[in-house]
Image (cartoon, rainbow, N blue to C red; front, side, top):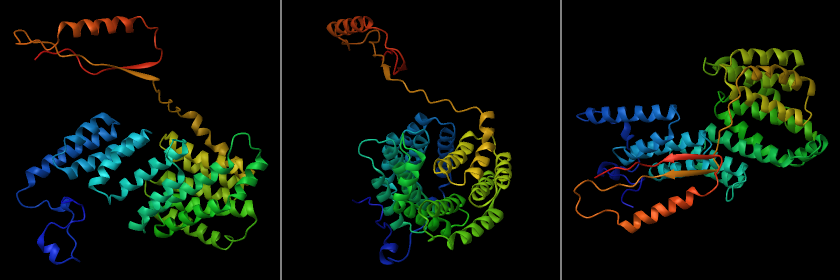
Length: 386
């Protein structure tokens, strides 16, 4: 309890409870330059391992951090890298270790929510969308103006809504009927996405999702609740895209306009908007596929079929890109670990004769087994002397 994150150490801040202590990372003055140079070098190694996807190096470097706060930072970065590698349960382990030291790191809290959500969508035992939703609500109690968390909460309700009607074997009519029946989930997603866009109009993802789901709500339920709000949101979204798109965001800004035109414009306008977006894509298969997934959702519900098909037709650029190879996963892993042998002249044998004979008999029995098939071999060590 002495190291609780909320306890103020300096007596000055204890006497002035409303005075906030500065972030310790900003205190780079005086004779501590050498320490911060070593920290910068260690941090560069962490970032290099993260960008290269070398998760093992990340985990080792995390344990080499000079102080606990640095280890927390490395654990959180390792958790994010593991999440991107779709190792969600392993990612949760490292995120939670980091959050024990830095419990108010909002980026780590978002990452934890994403892992909970992905595990729920894969029907992993013990994980549900309700658990992910409750996690995001707790985060929003602490950070009520964080647009990314609001958008992630909206994604939970959107995923729950889609899962309720997009079931194998359902006819188009049945999918539309089920989608309309689950309108409460749809409205929940709209409210969260709208809140995120109102907080930060540069959050195109939230704005276009809110507007798309509003149009789907009107289409499926014939409810005019969003009829007056949607034109205002459309104008705000067009203005935000026009004013706020930098070079890095060019593709997403353009594809947002394409998604918007699907909702309100003729097929020719839709086709032209998506072609302009694809021209800004830097051969990113995942970005193009994300755009296509939204169009396929609209097609499944029979929404504005001519405009949707015009958008899907432009996604032929996907066929010119190499599809990422499915990650190969071994059915089982064999770990070969060497055993230390005695150095010449060592007093007292490390291995007694019966142990060696027993290991040789075990190996003979294993060698008599049939081939295992698709497996991964990993060497855990080699004979050494000491």
